[in-house]
Length: 156
Image (cartoon, rainbow, N blue to C red; front, top):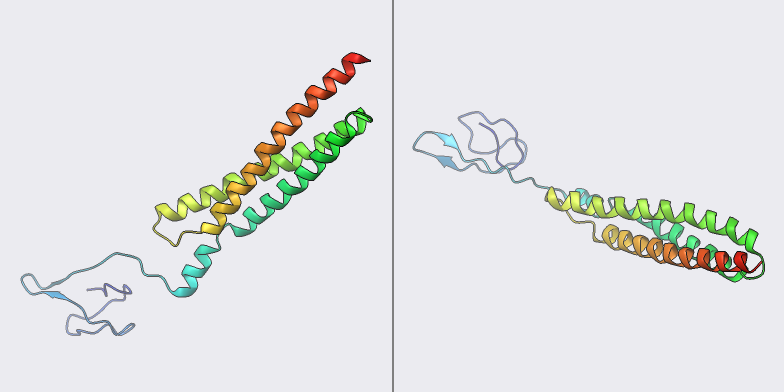
C-alpha cells in the first residue's frame, strides 16, 4: 500500500509511513488503505506558485506604460510634425501588442493555476489586467491620432 499523505510505499505490516511518519487509516473489511489523492504543497511551492507569471505581468505593464508615454508624445507632435508622429505611433503599436500578449498570458497563468487547484497568483492577474488596460487605452488613442493625421493630410 501507499501513504495517503506523501505517496511512499508502505509494507503491509507497518502502520506508520517511513518517509513522513503519518499514520495510515485502514479499512478492516477488505484490508485496503483509504487513499486521499489531494495534492499537498510545501510553503515554498505555494510561494513560488503565487509568483508564477509575475515577470511577464510586470513586463507587460512597463511596456504598456512606455507605450502610453510614446503615444502621448505622438499626440503632441501630430499637429506640427506629422511624419515623426507616425514613427512614434508605430513604436507605440509594437510595444502595445507585446503588452497585450503579456497581459493575456498573465491572465491565462492565473486561470490555469486556479483550475489545477494550486495557489492563485493574484498579483499576476492584477498585472495582466493593468497591462490589458494600458494596451486598450493606447490603441484607442492611436485610433484618434490616425483620425487627426488624416484630417491634417486632407487639409494640405
